[in-house]
Image (cartoon, rainbow, N blue to C red; front, side, top):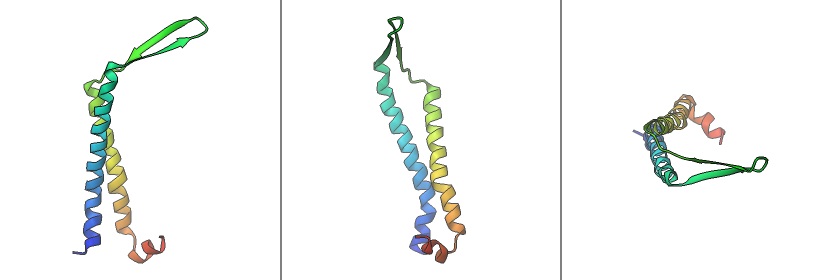
Length: 94
């Protein structure tokens, strides 16, 4: 099997793994936002609105699902498109 073909077959898997790792890293850093409180002041009424961030299970699951979908779209769909192109036409496009 040709090396370039083998590399293009592994690319969708690599992108899905990469985007999953990015999703987990985002969740890791978002977990630190639970200890911080944000506030804003309404200067018209001089009232203050404070709010915090709580990391729920739904947020974690939706973040991982979103990162998996982005990995699929960013890796698998372009690989399908590239596999349908003729090599000569693809090289001319560079």
